Picture 1 (spheres, rainbow, N blue to C red):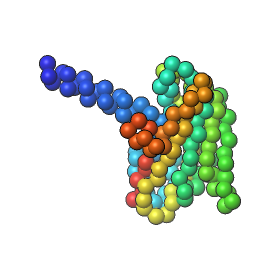
Picture 2: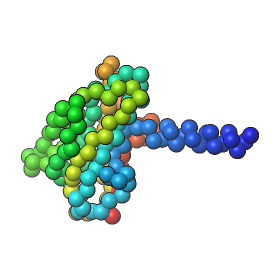
Picture 3: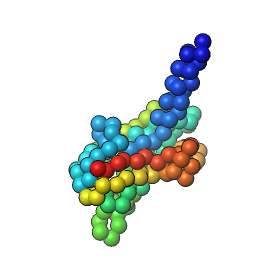
Amino acid sequence: MFRSLLTLSVAALIGVASAHATVRTESGLTESAAGKSEVYRLNVPTEKDIATTEIRLVVPAGVAISRFQVLPGFTRTVTKNADGLVTEIVWTGSIAPMEYARFFFQATNPAAPGTLVWKVYQTYSDGSVVRWDDTDPATGPASKITLK
């Protein structure tokens, strides 16, 4: 009895921990090499009973994004700094309840080892915004990629 209750509790926690907007390498890793050209994926699940309508990704300093995979049904807007580097991406479209979308992009990592912190802001059709930016790490963790 205790063992099945423990298993059920762990399964519930794993589901909660993994159910948020995340940036990973194309193969799903949280680690990459400094200076490497990498394909990243932003995974965005809709966790409410209403649609996600906008996703805003803040690009960590030093990351050089070179291209995006097209995602039908979404419009992409990029913001660049004075050096021409992409600093922010906004995708608008619709991700229905119980669905998720993956946004792929190619980038070159900074040359120095460290941690990339990816901040994601998920807007729902009612105008509410869920912050995946470490403002409250317990409920809205930012994605992190370790560069070695």
